[in-house]
Length: 154
Image (cartoon, rainbow, N blue to C red; front, top):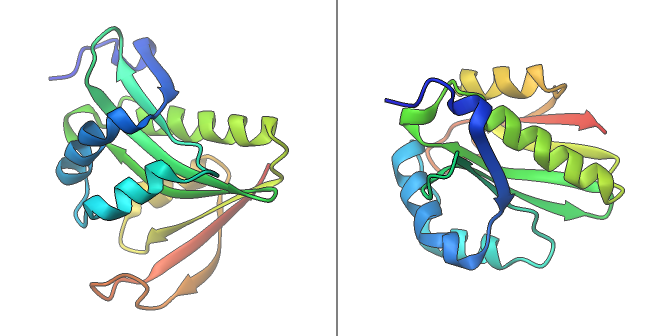
């Protein structure tokens, strides 16, 4: 059971290599189709990365993370994951906003992402944060799911 004031007491910080085990654990618990270990290692090692994690209060466990990269003047959101027990507390929204503010401070002019067309909760979150659907990639994911491409000007 999450603490009642969890959304008001979170801390966001950059992810580092030592966060990899916690990222892998959250990814396995929070995603229907988790990324492989090799993809997570590659992503956390990328030079153009801007990855952030959220923790509740002073508690050390990672509760949510966002994996992004900056390409020229665009932010690409690759992955957003929240501990299933910590959902609906605003952590994912806070991470998206933090990543966008960070990218904007570095001169980014737009943000984009791909989301499973069946992931209504994620699509609603991104829509609330100003993203709009711009295209559809049919059978984009390995299980045949379509990807909705969403974009937002910063």
